[in-house]
Length: 524
Image (cartoon, rainbow, N blue to C red):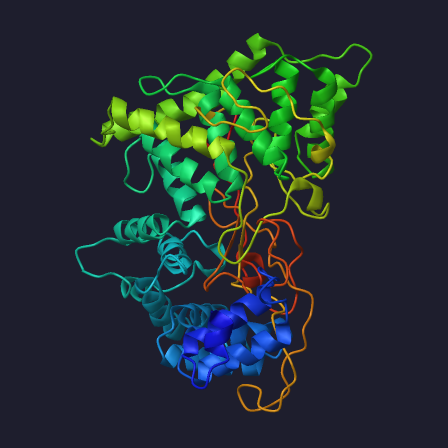
């Protein structure tokens, strides 16, 4: 039907765009084989016929081959049409001095504010990023004038923190996993003016987990490792399931956690051999605590941690951290408003998340552990570790599920529980990359008829980078509709190697991580 409409005498602009999307992705080869050149032509036709979203796709195609002037021209055309993705891209370009532009925050901020106000399910990132900027949690741009930040406030009576929270909540409700993770973290630690609420924390972490957020899986593992007094009991089976889910997708802190769980016998029988394998994977991916545990378990008489050691560690780290958050929340007069029904719903959501394999979200996707590059730096540490990625993990046979977890899947249920590293976890917020989507060399290529971009291998814009303090994200892409112009849509965030043609992640855009508060990032 689409082919028939697009091939008609005067097809609507959206028909060209949709056909270009299918041609660029090759998602349905039985109808449209992957053809970047044809996709580029269709995007160009759609843009010239008035379909504004096509300008962003064209801009990303030019950007992927480092033709920054033409890319900027496309984005600027989209800005004139109020396209949210183009507004966001130009806002970031002006903020960070990209696309051959000088850094100009006064020009960038209005664009970011407009893009945040236009966020949709297809483009949910802008409110989150703007909120993080208002919270001063993007170190590389922490020097923005206070007067400039206040221009984002809808009303003088609203504080920067209040508006930042509203923006992050909006992004979370639009199903942006990093925003959902941030809210889960805020409810767990009584931050952003929110009360300590284990139920809502688990609920938001579960949503983020279903969206492919690896750190959310580890957060759920830690919740269920200890449980939350007065809310839900611990469930070591779910704790192990969530950790294994993240570990098999390459999160080094989760690999460390799996080693710890096998060593102590959390959620299953003790298995020193499996513990060594998981610790080995974590060490291979630069987990700072893994080498020490490997050394302890590699001696003639392995000195494994006992249940008593485990209880002592969880009491002094996870449980203590949460107790302090609860007391702080109560001292500020903020209490959780839950109820048995909400608790049951949160636990049900967590169990659903434990059964789901990550799926591609937004423009980026995350590959299974087998496809993760050994060069990726996933950090984590024993009392703080659980963050590395390893391709070896995939070779380790699945551990026997606990009575509460279903075979082959992991089920989240209670709290964080493991040693986590104080350093923030890597995350990646890649630019909305359309990959090599593109391009034929036709006579009338965009901006000004120059030669069109030459198709290249699709970038998977997935470069890890920490985006904030005390929490982390996995991968996510900035604005824009799913990267349908990318050749392969397989992985999940964190897997493919991003193209170096244009900024593909916050790290490339200049955002760097800061050390986490030791007290707040301990898992065990």
